[in-house]
Length: 284
Ligand code: HPA
Image (cartoon, rainbow, N blue to C red):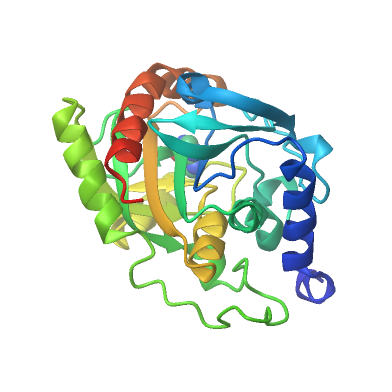
């Protein structure tokens, strides 16, 4: 069962080994990590690239199997920051454990990142949201973590907290900066709570009503394992969701992966602009 197999793995050792391989590429050591969600690969266009690494060439890196997730690590500079961008992530619904899904953050931490920008595609639960809207993640509700599928399940990791405080999972400073950056660039930015579900099936309309009733504004199948691991490592986190569709049962909901991707791709230039604004304003 998953919690026994998780017990055998030394995640820190794996992250350090993975980082050691990547250091051979002699790119500047990144201070900021950026994880690009489904359909957001284009956001990376703004980077002055020092090296591109296939994640299949990085030891212990879980392989992405989903259309829209490229599986590339890009190292370079953007807005004066040395940055590591992961275009493509892995999800629990591909058969990975939450710890494997959170490995991205452990790896970025091992590479030297002190801040993490996470992006994703999400279904709108808030009836005032429209497909194509951007939402700043104020906080999250993770149904998998609440049900025992936290990425931190397993033996305690030496030197890291066992019981991670998620009071400020999303950095108040970076949220303020994201809000200012959106305003300065004329980007309309929603704010809300991201609910994580396991997927890969979309929700039923009854589940969508439930997720709305517990305070969710957007629902998705990713991101939270990375955020929780990042917080264990004390990285500052900021999260952006692109509302790719309205969730099941809402008027106008359209739930095909291709349409979801197309909507996200159209929003990629706003995400790029917003991330650039955040990088510009981020403290050293
Ligand atoms: N539900 C869950 N995850 C999603 C959705 C959705 O409607 N859209 C994009 N990711």
